[in-house]
Length: 207
Image (cartoon, rainbow, N blue to C red):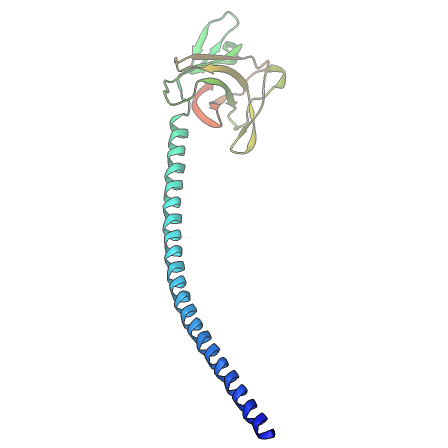
């Protein structure tokens, strides 16, 4: 009986061993298959990364072209002041250009045209005038219409401001400034700004 039991146990164990060996062979086959899949996936992933890199590179080029185009459009849409005339107007309304004395300078007159620009959008614009004295300081008086505006992220003083509706008809803008006191002798700059850009400049001399 014990011999039969031992023989049966051995047969059962051998059967289990065969079963385990078969299972191990199947697992080995699975490992080989998975390794092959892994190699394939690695290759595909490498290709995808390469494709992604190429796409990102193309997108970077497109974005740069778009930025460059926007810059060109922004530059092209800038308004320009032309035919700038700076004149002294005396108490009788007589005008002199270029050089003048304080007694001839009851009011300062600045006039100019907005040049033709088919790219710029039609609409309201603010145009600022800075009159800079010989020491480089902006002539500024809130009571006479002066204030501040933003330029390159900083606040700057302006002497005069005027808004108008740009419609590309080469409109003329005219500014008058009555200082109320004598101008010091020397060279003065007149700078014109709109949309965050300097659009023109001129000068005059007080003798």
